[in-house]
Amino acid sequence: EPGRGWVKVAFARHEREAGMLAGLLRELDIPVLIRRAGLDVPDMLAGGPRELLVPDSRELEARALLDPMEPLD
Image (tube, rainbow, N blue to C red; front, side, top):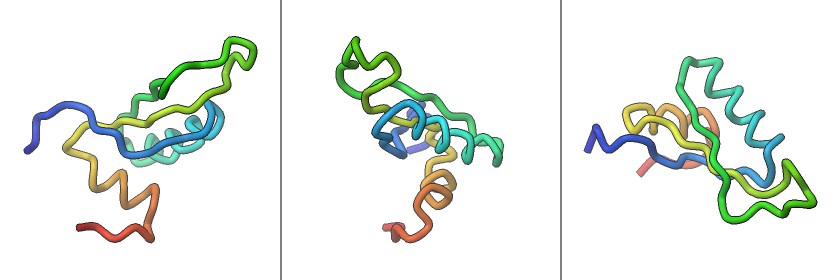
């Protein structure tokens, strides 16, 4: 149901990959948040997995952009 807030639409292995995916979303004016998934390893600084979240109202659009081959339910 719309209005749930933010939903996870992608997983990135590290901050650089997350930044590239977020850039694609921002090109289409889709707001995106990047948050850490799990624990960062202090020695790696920007290392560690990330999750990308978008407003629930833009979820389908974001998923279609990030993974055009993924079938929608």
